[in-house]
Image (cartoon, rainbow, N blue to C red; front, side, top):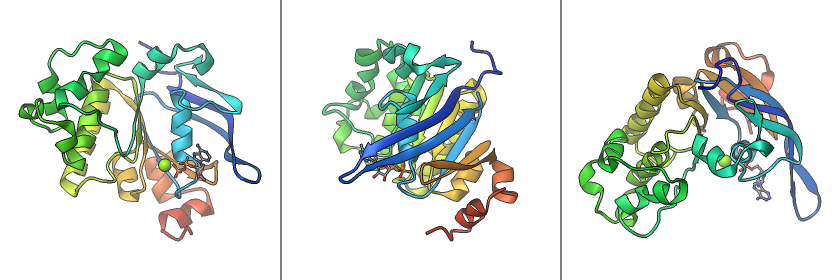
Length: 246
Ligand code: ADP
Ligand code: MG
């Protein structure tokens, strides 16, 4: 097991450019931060501020133009991508499903990662789905069921770090609650580290140990969650929490 004192993820002066039609624009601008192991860090910020881009760098879907990211103390350049992606799993808002049954979709982890699925029905139950869905076509599931299936598929690998990108935004309130409880339980029982992007301030506060605010490619505030909401250091944070950010 990795040492607890080591950050789960460390961002060192990360800059990322996207080439627009006219000029290069820094989508991430000098991000320096440490993700505490075993903690849930909630990441908030206006749409387009660079949150998803930051997560995509953590499992090498993208690479930074400047700076370095380390996972459990090892620079990303030294990781084998398959091993990295088993340990650092990214779950999106609209999780794509393959044609075929729920079971076939769960078995993706066997085909991609060589992970053996001992009890696929149990995986479904962990995310609040029933085992009788195994033989159903994945495309026929509701949005909420698909999101939970995507999570079940991710959990099969028992990742050490979960990167969650607005995963509850399409769910009804009851499903949101269930997914939150599942993830909080995983964090508590298995010590899974999470970066959890959400646009719901209440959720950021409910589930977070630490909270970061990103505006325009910069991390404006990094604090423990209670401090973030009660006594933020920066004016932008106060405005953002109050819903006055435009
Ligand atoms: P957020 O998740 O905070 O809404 P994103 O990280 O998705 O923000 O996007 C940040 C900015 O980068 C946006 O202005 C977006 O249009 C731009 N962007 C994202 N992906 C690409 C890409 N592949 N090519 C060019 N620009 C991109
Ligand atoms: Mg996003």
